[in-house]
Image (tube, rainbow, N blue to C red):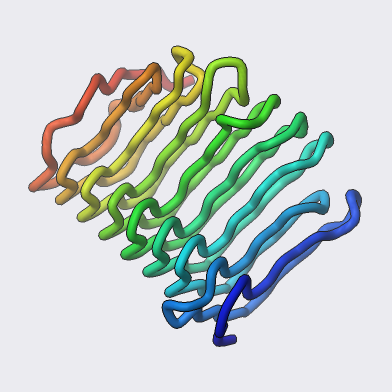
Length: 226
């Protein structure tokens, strides 16, 4: 599905509608804006899709609902997008839970995958497993702001390789934005992790640090397993 301009797919569903996308290749060819934009509906499932070469975001999941919403992405790729592979954001009082598995984020100019709770009011939880973030400016990022969504981002069984920054966490309230990672491999990242303005990055102490990682900016804490 080549895109000549604008957004390729915009989903503005009814509040109780569940939407699924399967087997799509969306190619922005360096001129399309966003690949998939989700603005309303109760849930979105994306399976076996490729979104690449957009001038902005591959998948923009923007929650403006007052009720809970969910996102699931599996066996998909978000490559060479100019802003982000996937952005998941809250902008109202509805909570969001997102599950990402077996998905690749390659060569995105700014961020592979970002969870952004800085304008929402309820929790934003993102979990990634068995996935790859490689050759982006930032591999995985989480951010929020004081008084807004408590935003958590967990990464397990994944590869974070060759990014300028592997993990990034920022928020104006201590613990308001938190990144957790375990059983993952980090190699060749210019900065292995960067936390600022109250953002938290915590390791389960069972990760694999390969060669070529730069030192973290800020502190990587540890957290115990249950």
